[in-house]
Image (tube, rainbow, N blue to C red; front, top):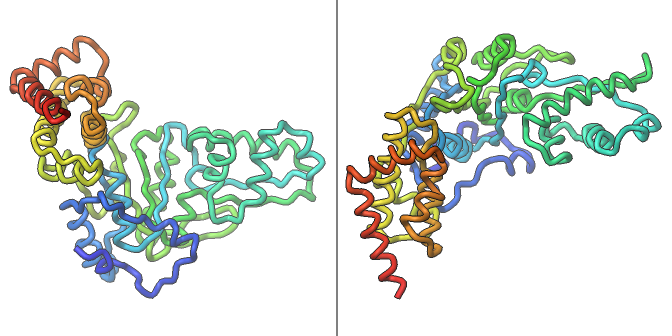
Length: 367
């Protein structure tokens, strides 16, 4: 699979800043069937008008590679990658953006230092980054906290504005920036959003020939804009994905753990560890723990991240049996009864015996 075969707009010239946003595949990246399938489908339909595929849904448990796949598509299509992480109390300003008054310098100096720094950073923003990204960097907070801080700053700025002479600036959201400039946007967990009006705004933004009404102008969807919705199944706080949102998706992938062979290939590429016996037993263990957790309504997940970190710990000299708990089982649950269920499943499938054999083999190789 040659990545250059899937560039969607070969004549498009990206700025240096945009080029920096195009994801670069690490050497550990392994091309999946899902990646091949999506790339072929999008490329095949890219110039077919109403049959174009530009809204994707990747749905699966945590650790199944949804974000990694979204980033890989950025590399394959030659599009800048960005993301927005949804949260329960999102409002329409998080979808569209916000208008912020510019406070006079003498009033700005009277504010608390943190508010001064945040507002000054927003005023100096060149518009390339969203307001939320600016606040995340300046305040060192996550996306949800930055969005909440933006709402506080809006009220603070309005309270300190000087009547009719005040200047106002519009700060677009990350969604609007990607929509207008033709980026690949990952929309993480829209199924946690509570406000129906917010979902309606998001739905309208995903129309193939749609437009967004901003306070300053109406913008149309850039022809290169691709939206990749990533949603966890059985995630705390999540609801079934909105039907209208699903209806705007042209391609969906059910994301599960990859085959054992692919798991082992990815772990070798990621960690450099190549003991086939260890990789094989660890992969079987992860798969069994994942199935057992699902069957017994245990909320945690045994996924690829757990597998990578477990393999890496053993590569660094940790005990396979002991690190199983710290890297995998305790990540699923720390409830004693649930741990016993997981241990019993491993025991009944002889995986604890296999782990003991691996432990002996690893110790033998140390001497």
